[in-house]
Image 1: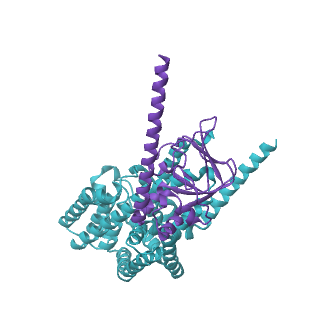
Image 2: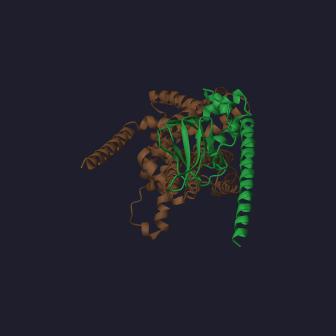
Image 3: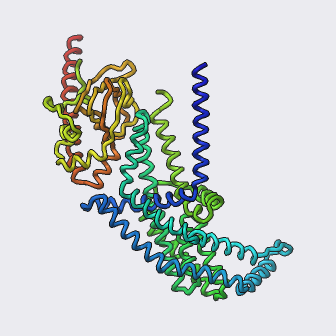
Length: 347
Length: 174
């Protein structure tokens, strides 16, 4: 009797604990997001710190060097790129509110209705939809960097998190491992190591791949005189994380922008060709070099993760969805494998 | 009790009875080539674990992740469900070092005979040392290969001896 009561109490406590954890996660999701971004950055930068350590620096010196480089690039980003992006978003908003693009979209709607009989009696209302989407996008972009307090917190807290996770990450990990009961200790250590190996390669690969593709897209669109080249190029780089759908979306957005800004057919073909060449370069050169093939993520999983991420946490959620899905997948697979090989049930 | 070549600490030094961690580590053959600075680097990544009497450290058949060094207490190495004792190890001894190289199932179980304090040194730690401090890592790796070669040589000698006995027994039977 006592045993069943004990068991029941344990289950109730576990459920209560889980519920409290979920509640806390939801309540603290804003702070957690900042922490996750910091942790992700620290994780991506860790090999550089380790490399400097290997070259003879202490961990503190290595972390400081990486941190100063990061601060410098952040400064360059805020000083040069952010004003440009904000300007471009403002221009898009303005062109919609002044009705400049409305005429073009109406033309597009008309020609769509004429060429596709099914759409004849449907009220497409593309203008309103695009307007809403642009407004939503720019609002969430502004809210991301918008309010001054959250901007300062983000700018202070993220570097703080990155610095200490880079410097003391190993100690923190060791401390966390030390509280694991003896019975699960070896298994946990192995699990951490295996997931770290796979996820580390995958995340760093994805990060550098997105950066390279984004950079190439920005350059290509700039050469082709596409308006808002910075926004579209960055978007194309980030979208590249989602297989098939991402690159296609990037290209379609660019072509649509050329179309809406009354560009020539020739220019649209050039943009399409540029994206084709970048994709080719990505698949032949960049992907095999930087993306480790250790985590096999099915395109459908990535796509769903991105949609779910977007549904719950907006634009930021979409970008964090791919790494989060990779972490969950590797953890589950390795956990199952460990569970089988350690045969915990038979003990 | 005949001690098993694969599990007994054949590299044991009789004299060492020192107290602090660095000295315990310095007396482990695997780390004997390391300077004090390198030992301190190593100490930072070692995992300290405490075990109650009769607590299992690892079970036979489980995948091995690394080795343990005994800081205090006593560890019994046993085989099979009947728990046949292969070796009894104490302070300054170490076991499971083969798992540093090969992620194969453990060939015996380790159980704490007394309340014990152990240091764990695992494959991920060895790889991390090899990456960040390659000189230190190489010294450890070289010692490790020498020790495993020595164990192999001894096992081989035992094997030959047993074969001879088997031959003479089968001749007698004829």
